[in-house]
Image (cartoon, rainbow, N blue to C red; front, side, top):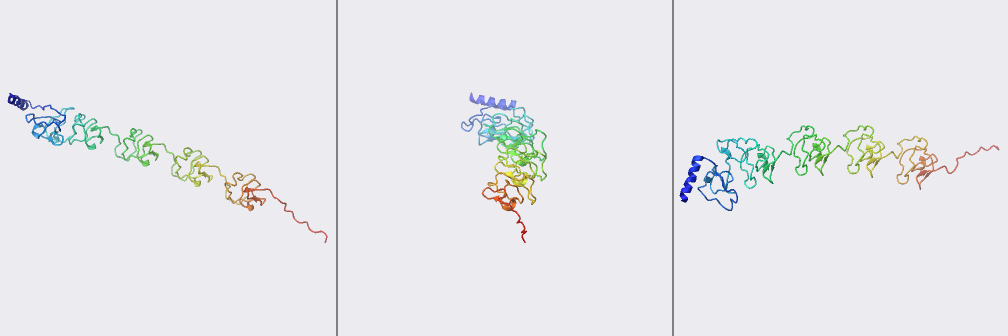
Length: 329
């Protein structure tokens, strides 16, 4: 009776030419030794190649493989037709899209669509094979080009989880990045891996227009521009950047000029520094300074009286009167 059943199965395969369904689980622990089970589809348990419709039984997973050298254009999802030899990639959606982890894809197709099973990124049209699902995912990077993308045409999601691997430059604010040179602003925030607004001025020695300078986050983001003549309140990192030559290293901002220009001309009345004289010793070259002006040497004061205990010019302490001529001759 058993022989008759097996003979009937063989005859049904011979005359129908259909691919048999089968068991696809526990193939490596529960071997399929049934030699009478032939023409098995991809993923079916097997122990020798004659059982498989493709003539290929994977000795690692003991499952029937898809013969990629003998596939025509792949059929609709789930149906694997065997036929004329071609390596042409399947039509969109025509691919193995089930049991991707249990039955690793062993084909040679490329340009597989999103949702198709894969084992390497090169098999996917998007070059993105998710190894946690063994399925092709959407393209999360931009094409390799140095041309700036159109507005908004950039990867702007999952920047930390999927680091940007493109070669684009001039990326806009909000685009994913890995280096500052990729951003039009030259500012790639490494905490978010996204391009941020330009926080520095362009590299130029021309003085900026009034107010055209960065005046915020000066300590957190030190100014690295090459501008000079920056106004009071602008971010700075060295004195030569400020028009006043006074970059406050506590705030990293340009402050008003607290010294007088280097000149030997006497200042106009009141035009001198008269604060912080002891803390910030006056080193200017002015002379004829009025009482109350900061000083460091007597010759700087009009009174020739620089009080070294306060470093402030004082009033004259004695009158210089000429000796009257002797009339009693």
